[in-house]
Image (cartoon, rainbow, N blue to C red; front, side, top):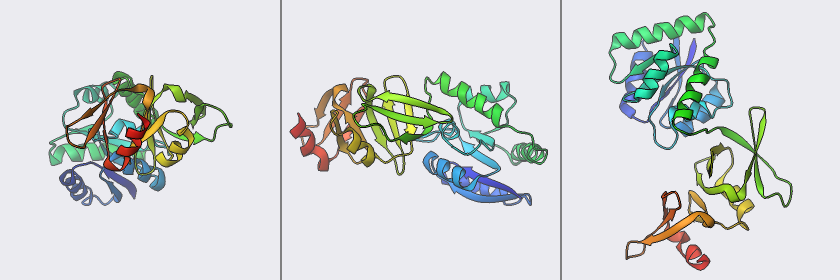
Length: 260
């Protein structure tokens, strides 16, 4: 049986793929994921053979999922509705994909090729990694799911380990940090890192370095705050120097007001 995971933020799309895949005797669906964060977790934990992966998803897209897993990249069928660059990349690299909306015949031809390559043990990992790298470079992003290493006392850097390399990120280069369920996105000046650590842990490390929690999912470096806007009532919006807007929640408003 070919262990398969479906990843798509649209319930109808997941249901459609599930219906088609359940008709295949070679396929065993082991998980359905509604976003990129759960996809990273389930791919690492369940180690699928085959993944049907949506590209356009909020927060963490399909390319960021593949660039963030620790488990080896499985055989992937990319699913897209309108990403023209991605389609061109797949065509150049002979990597199959499903363009929404697709017919049952198109789906079957893609699945038949996937089953053939998997049964023949054709390793697609290197090819897919090239596609992912190409896409992220085109988007001027380079995000990895990485591991935070405990720093030496007094060391004003976040030390990150990923795939045989260690990256040092100066606290002063971090603009803000975005928290998810079990990982964070560290937005630095030249690169964004997706790290397996909680926002609360990083908040403790960065408390003395002009970082301020302004809502349950955001920790900002006050050095990179351009302005604070108000709607004339009680809501505040922090505008970073790159024009990113981050809402201040009411429970953290007094902390920000005390800081400024």
